[in-house]
Image 1 (tube, rainbow, N blue to C red):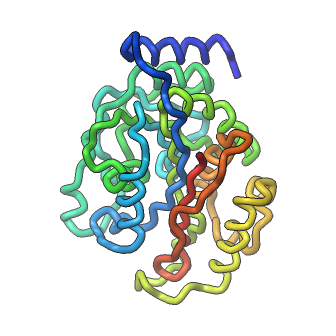
Image 2: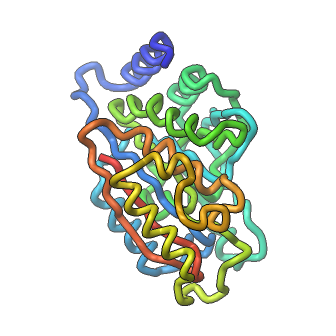
Length: 274
């Protein structure tokens, strides 16, 4: 980590707070499997679990999201004062396109995060649906600033895990970090029925992932999980897992906050660190 940029980030965050403020509570890091865009408007066990979780979390100063739906070659940070809601999906009911998430951006932290991570700056990218589809349930009041760091597809898996160690100190400054993707994601092998029986390969992958989540992060980093290539023909929905795991400090617990499947093969497993 570049200490000079880290100290600059801390100074900027402190400058926006009251001079008599109490120290921030270290925020949780979350990984949320987001599944189908229909989860934005549906009432089901998964969406109810996110609403319940949101009520138990301490309110962060801001939220940094790493979403599967903003994947780039080279890291990029969104630096936008009022990010628009991006409806980056097609063929769904009109009611989905009427949903907007109107949170403010986070200018100071996002600019300095770009320096900290040697990232490009994007002043137009709003909130893609990997971001706002989970925020509408977790924080429905739209009253917490949000910014995004893209998923850099040019980097190997260990780099993404190490990125979590760079991001981890942000949690001490009141910034919640959320990764949004899916524990399994093969759109060519899903059932149209949301409640379809779970495929054998998906269950075996999810079981092995759940064990490695607690006992052996190396298996997750090295893709050493059964049926990995089938579970993730492409990596953009898997890589957001790694920085969340990498942000774990010694002594912090990993807790599964939801487990279940949709459409027979989509593991909707979500977990929390801290």
